[in-house]
Image 1 (tube, one colour):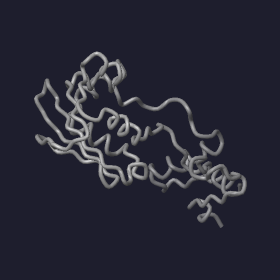
Image 2 (tube, helix red, strand yellow):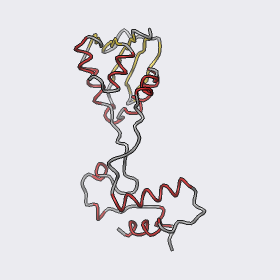
Image 3 (cartoon, one colour):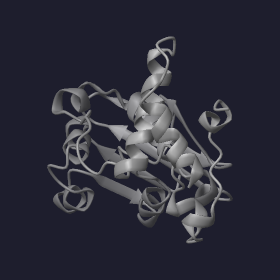
Image 4 (cartoon, one colour):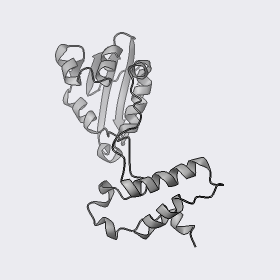
Length: 192
């Protein structure tokens, strides 16, 4: 708890020579200690224009960032993805806890082949329709092991916009008493 009070005290008397980004970090940490992690506000970067402008390569890169490595460890999934409107083919592979893709290729031993249009993919990303609704309507066709797509979706993480800066996260301390946890903060080392 000493670190919390030191941080709050220091946030009100930061010297003028501190750079803007560091000042922001200190002030965000002080705000979090006083009020907790914010639950509202933030930016929405998934506007229709942004989603429609994303190429399939950008989407696959984004999915690779969301892949939970420990969950994907030991899994091997291969998908052929065919976009009918932009006439592009990809092979998407999850192996060694990493997602990779290749353009203008197909794998004969793929778990599933997914055929859809880019517009259908955009509608799913914009939450205008669910993946299951598009499969049921025939806009998305899956040949092969259909459950492999569900398995892939289960390996992806969703990131909250706001996250803990200085306070321990419940996810990482597995329910231990927060009062007894030591928080190491560089600010506490700067004070005499």
